[in-house]
Structure formats: structure tokens, C-alpha cells
Image (tube, rainbow, N blue to C red; front, side, top):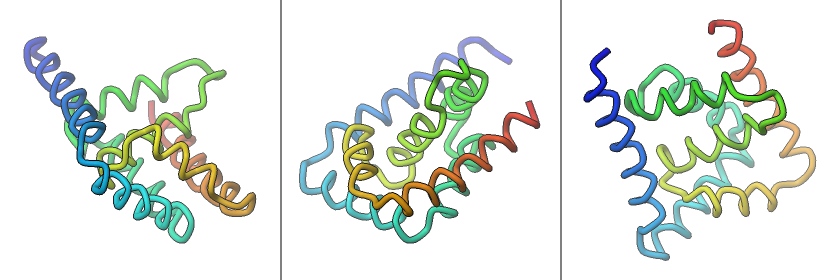
Length: 128
């Protein structure tokens, strides 16, 4: 793989994250509300989008960042990292707002999301 291509894709991913963080507050709040609804009522959809992220559907740079998370330390909260990435890429919800939205979930909703995301992570770890 061409080093210049990899750098360009990584920069594009970081640029997208910055763009999401700098969006107007009203847009960020709306995106966050939509992401909260997805986590609350469709945890499998969130997990599916993480699978898409790992497959490269959001670009090579974001895929490489997600794979670094998968290969990361066992002490790392991989589910949170990947959920924040997909919140930004799919729902345009900044990571800090995604974390706040997660805190608004009930215990059973958190468990359902963790199960769905965890299954996606396990599948990705097996394929590495």
C-alpha cells in the first residue's frame, strides 16, 4: 500500500472527526438525539455499522483506525472507542456527546448495546 495514500486517508478521517466536532450546536444535538435513539432501540444497527467501519465502508483511514482499536490493549474499552467512531461517521454525533448519550441509557439498554457491539468485536478479532 502506498504510504502517501495511507496518510491522505488517515488525514481525511481526522478531518471528518474535526468537522463533526465543529458542526453547529443544533446539528450536533439533533445528531446526538438520533444516535441515542439508535443505541436505545436498535443496538444491532449500531453494531452493524461498526462491522461496516471495520470492512472499510467509511473509508480506508477510518478502517485502519478501527483495526488499531481491535488490535489494541485488552485493557482498552474497544466497544466505547468503536461506538464513538461510528457515532461520528454515521450519525455525525461527536464522541463526547456520544458518551453523554450512552450515560442516558438504562442498564438493560447498555447491556443490549454491549452484547451487540461485543459480538461484532469478537468476530473482528477472530478474523484478524
